[in-house]
Length: 392
Length: 138
Picture (cartoon, rainbow over the protein chains, first blue to last red):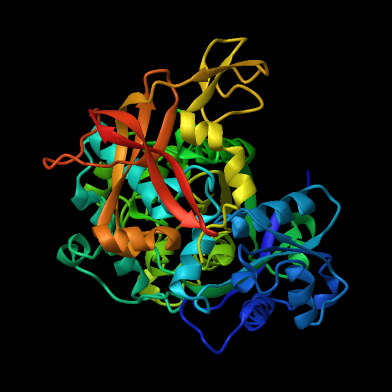
């Protein structure tokens, strides 16, 4: 296998952009990515593009979104394909791009993601979000993704003594992290009282336990490690990448207090990287609902199963702690434009590992190894990546 | 706009929805529900005997879907009731299944609570009322 390096990354701010469609959002991220390549890049050198997207703008472009977007930025001839695994679409775009470079088939590959969620009515939005789970049974029980994660949370509370307050601690932490991130959708702190008293969504969740609907795009340029020096002296190496699936429906899984797909993907990424969880300096994890971040701590090996809420109590995962998690604000506060999310995590890590977090106050200091974790739906799929910087 | 379960798609699952038709793996003897092509327990068995599940089980986990959080095809129900509980039930025969809970106890739902399946109206789409199983406390 060839080594894989990230030599450029860009993303839009996440949020509500009524004047921008999928093409415009994609172009913004793409051009920011091009500008970030230290020695510049002739775009004609890009050989392939994997673009994550769930709904293609609420279904307006059901097929062949990738060539539409690449044509929009002047690269109509590039081998381009849309990748879909619900909320992990961006992560799988990155995974496929990494495999394409590692295989030696290509040396320069674009991994990107885009989602336009704010155009559609809330009823249509809930339709789109609810049909990536088990439609025949979960959905006919009247449940949504929030409901499925809520079942995991209620079981976790029963089994491990997790309290409602612990869920809110995730929301409060991630909102605090987002304040200084110019790319984040919600740049404001919330108090624990606020987080405890939001409008109910699905017990035990209230609105503050849920990530928002967002517009946004992200783009990452992967290069074979041997060629990276042509473009930058400071590449970020993709040391390990893993992806795995599980039964789609919650009723088919043995355990619902963890995601088997995450565990398997993480094991694969750690093995490839030759790295243990203790060596990770910071992580961007998939907190679509507050419980998802709590499950991720154990699934990624940061603690034993059932111990995750103690990491929150001890402040381990806040900025300044031993293992900051979601310094971007996470899906909760940075935002969650479905197809973009997995690539947006890579953008955050690329900047952080190069010491380029836009506000000094949110820079993770002395970090060398980072991890990102992107989940499809309620854990039907997951992708995990381990990154190594060359120092700040 | 609701999740579109077409009438033919719905019809194909009528044995499961009306009669809780499961399959017993002839290789390992365990019971699958909903049906699989390969047994979800031994992951090798492909032969099955049809078995009707008792519908008796215990609550493995639960949630309460609030009015604003319901899928569009359930929003009318959520509006009328304010919210409705959804339970993940572990059946006596082994499999877990997900469905709404009717007549929730006033003192609240608890993990481990005994429930039984009942036949109820689920919702209406394309002019056809869809029926299926829900659970109620024993």
